Length: 272
Ligand SMILES: CC(C)(COP(=O)(O)OP(=O)(O)OC[C@H]1O[C@@H](n2cnc3c(N)ncnc32)[C@H](O)[C@@H]1OP(=O)(O)O)[C@@H](O)C(=O)NCCC(=O)NCCS
Image 1: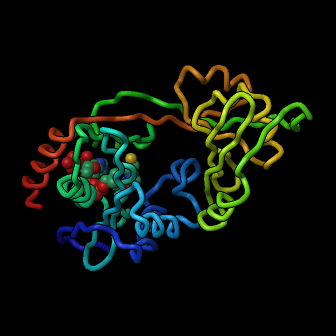
Image 2: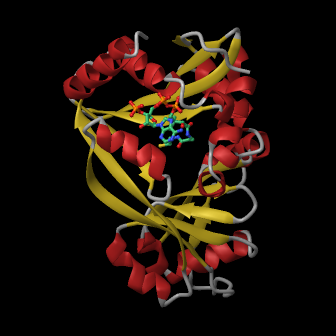
Image 3: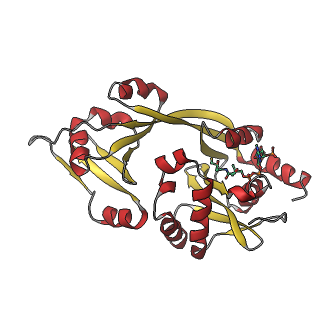
């Protein structure tokens, strides 16, 4: 698919979404696909809708010989620029496509008030993690990724709860294979991801202490487990509930100026 020529880096258009999703499917690891939206059956439709709506993510593609071989997605989180996705098709890896996507993307981003760039990498993705470290990114946090069974208990009459499981969230789910809904209990309001057919993704394992929330989720879909991304010190409590450790993610960060200088140097040394 790829030739030896330098990639063209450009803003993605909605028509690129099928090729972009294909790159992601080929390049992402089984763990990435299982535990994120990247494994969604309608990922191409999701990317298309995100590009068309000019939502929070800014998408770039890398083209070689008229074929899309790479993609990246960037978003702002407060004063932080976040590299949300970076994927290069396996047939084009190791030829500076990833470096170009990053360097040219960063140069073309209006970084505004953002001073740092951050990203999350799965710990078992040793090649990408080693590359990021070699560029000067430093680890600032670690999260464990775990699957937790939901006890098969139905809500009792005094356990009040409501959710947006059906409605617009259900429409998104049928389109993309994932969606987000809200679950309200007396204790709290939770934003929950409905991911593929196996998981309810939770933002924090605090929900594990809310018996009403657990009973409600069991009622909504008894086949699913909870997918939690949380601080390592939450592991012991989750393990006591039968959790399985799926992996770990590391958040890495670097001042934007430092990274831009480093990537620019790498590309000019390579004549890219
Ligand atoms: C990580 C990824 C985006 C890098 O893109 P790429 O086009 O292959 O990377 P490049 O050719 O620009 O090389 C970037 C660095 O990767 C490393 N690398 C490239 N080819 C490599 C190889 N065959 N073996 C080991 N490391 C390699 C090197 O550190 C290289 O930097 P350097 O040559 O300046 O030291 C790509 O490999 C990929 O899509 N991997 C799978 C998905 C993924 O891990 N995405 C990141 C999620 S956080």
